[in-house]
Image 1: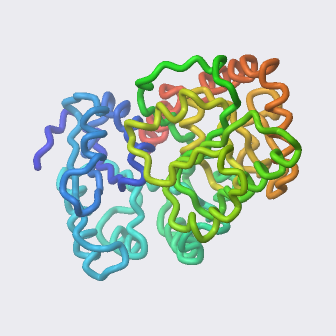
Image 2 (image 1 turned 180 degrees about the vertical axis):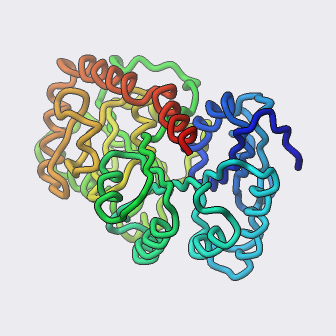
Amino acid sequence: MKISLMNNRTISWITPSYFLDVDLPIVNELCKQYTIYWIVLLGNNGNSDDEAFINAKINKCDKLCVTYYHYKTRWYSLGRISEINKVIDLAKSVSPDLYYLSESFLPYGTILYRRKLPIDKCVVACHNVTTPKGARHEMLARWYTNRWLNTFTNIQTFSECQRKVLLSKYRNKNVLTAHLAIKDYGEPTKLVDKTELPYIRFLVFGNIVHYKRIDLLLNAVNILYDRGIKNFRVRIAGYCRQWNDEYAGLVKHPELFEFMIKRIPNEDVANLFVDSHYFVMPYQDIAQSGAMTVAFRYNLPLILSDIPQFKEFVDDGVNGFTFHTQNVTSLADKMEWVINNHQLMYDKVRANQKKFVDERFSLSTITKLYTEYFDKL
């Protein structure tokens, strides 16, 4: 595929499907300043929801060319090496000035990238400088992250916390730190007046894995019920491999829950948020969270564990709420306080959150960090 190079600043950008919502808004903005050849990596099922989502959201820009590459092999198979080479050759085909790599191609990428690309012209994303405890393939992820960060010099982190960790462990790195852009799933298709709802709704959204500690939330609900507090609901929406084995047995009062244990289609996400009041993140560990930015988009105050990674996002009682990490009683106490004081403080907390998001997460503020960094390179 040919791309018209309209200026002398050209970027080949490689994005896997699981970082699509991270890169899409950035590419949409940066194509106003750079010629971007965007390679989006998808599964082996031909057309997908992701293609439709991109085609609906992408700016119609002469300086942007989108190419979809559908895998035919599994990530760990030797056959994947041939596919990685094809993708890298696609990126090289436009002779770009810069490569932006969101796809790490674990476990083969560091070798193949080094062999085929000029490392000094590569900017690589590192979403998890520290691998969350309990993450899937945790040991493999830790090993490969170390290889990834030792291989490249120009590295992006997505939070100040992760930037500090990176600089403390690795020398001579040129680091771009820019927050994840707000994840926008569009406007809801239903109108809801939250003041008329008969109860407070707490929402969990996103893939359910061990380090997110959804078990704490399930047990906190049991504590609240035993205290006689029942004027609330907890909606849990997201895919989980181990739901029946690890979580279902903790549900003692199913009437207080709304379960949607499945992959949530993009077009349904906005409606999940429009009739919810608070977004709960009882995580024991994380680098940064994309789900958090969805809550920011739909103005749901956050209830977070007080891990260091979250401190730059929530001021307890001002624009959200925190509880002591891995402490189920602390979570139950915070939820009880929120339920009892909801009518008095909700509008003010939402207003404070909106002000914080407008100042720190505007797309223009974030993309300016990218352009300043890229132009120096």
